[in-house]
Length: 319
Image 1 (cartoon, rainbow, N blue to C red):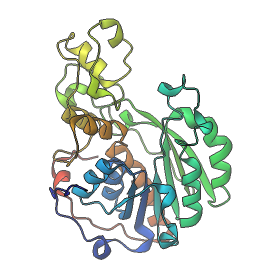
Image 2: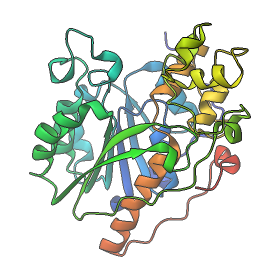
Image 3: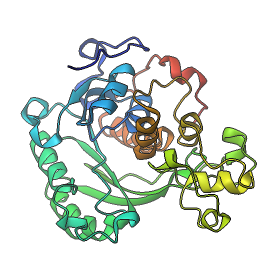
Image 4: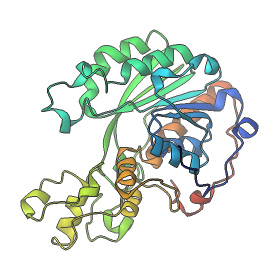
């Protein structure tokens, strides 16, 4: 039996509040809602956030997001056709990640975790005006050889950006690839001043943290030789505290990912760590979605809607 979903944030009636069709959004592989937060803050109105993991769906519902709990392969996309201004997709990255390179099956051969064919099928069926799709650097060759040629059959402009979140208001070094496809090309966003780990969570480390990973719940080994590798954010914590602390809390990981205070993550401590480690940092998603919004507004002279901030935005730093 499904557990009751806590309602920490009042749910929105998206059918009533959603902006006009050109400014609507649909998200695939929505996770805990990191990208959804940034996309919404940029002025796009969510039609649906599609996610298969029940715990992440609990988080999306608690945050008031219009949640479709389903495998993206089993969704009837015909109901969205011609109604979506921006589709955002973050296909699973495990098949392409550095941590998976020793696996026997990886990349495009990992048919259970290569979400790009499912994404391309959804894009073809929905026909959104714009697409933003995100993944790790290891997928670059596949994206260039397979994904981009397919997208060029549908979109006049297809761009591939490599962006590090630390340059866009996130106190963490996190590099990802972003496909931005649409009717016209847009300029890559301007970089912003760096935010250090000390500023974000008070840890005496005067750089952005290393990447927040899904395994932060494990903490780090006691031997300093492991910390020097800076494989994840907890390594920087161990260095900064000389081994006095070896594990970041969920709240600290949320801050390093720039989730706003009070965001209602659901699940166990480990499940929360995994959700945060998998997420797109909201300010980075906001930066990209805002650039797309600006291009769409210029193209169609559509005014950007004024949106009432949700409770967690009230404590969120200005981007």
